[in-house]
Image (cartoon, rainbow, N blue to C red; front, side, top):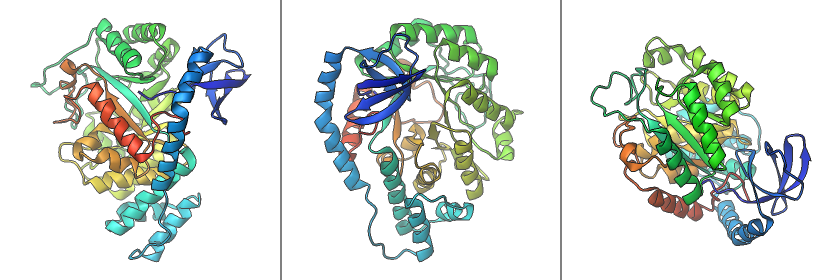
Length: 423
């Protein structure tokens, strides 16, 4: 239910097309062979995923047009920075004024923001991040779905509930038809246009099986597919891309190699980073980020994580708390807000399920601190609770209908459009 809004193709140059949305021009990559100027299309994540009949497109546009401009007005109102602030030091205000003007902040300035514990300062930080989100990306909010199809994993990462050595966890693997059926329900019944297929590093899902699944889902449905199955190497990445996957969700977790080695028994941070770099070169949309609240993690480490995410050319930033003994809510919000200041024009910043587990009001707080993406769990309920990466995960027993209803209500109250296009 990242609702795609129909747009009209106005130009085609090789694989690059220009699409008109309510008079606003956007660009997308086209892989549909017979696409023509004048066609109406759905695009997602910068890719054309489907053509639709003109009559159907016009009907959808008429339905959404008035609502979208109403939402934009609400968003503009809620994202204004205060004209005057009292009780905040001049040096802190000047840093945020500089960010609001679009100027790049120095490392020591970013650290000053991350280290603040003053409620008034943090309030202005969050409002500035939200202002920049609206300024550059308007009121778009991506709402992707995720299917967790296996909780088997060959790795033994110390923080993860599905690690190999967790002998009390009841394991499951969805079969191929169950995965395809779950994808079909999310796409056809609930309107999702982008899905993440996620699992542990399960040897029962080699490249050949995954490519077959991706091809079959793409054959049956129009959808943008992200994969999240751990480190798989350049060769498998190429196979999955050829099959139709276009996004990779893989957190590097920490840019500090010492902290990384404490989390991963014998694994090397550079190998994970190489997977992300290889994926980007192959054409994948990159979704990555770090863990917040790791033992021994400093403000310098957290800033390095944010800067590395930008360096990796991430399409989406995903930062979540270490659970169950998570950090304070404000530390997560600071990471989201500083991420927006570091990459104001491009970043899609996710309010993670982990953050929602830490704080029941995390989604609203995160969206008002610079975030503009959420992910809903469309894994069948009989499997979802078993994907126990941390205890008492948010939404693990909620129907997708309830998740969608509550998400839309929140987004509309904040003036956000549930699409990756700001209108």
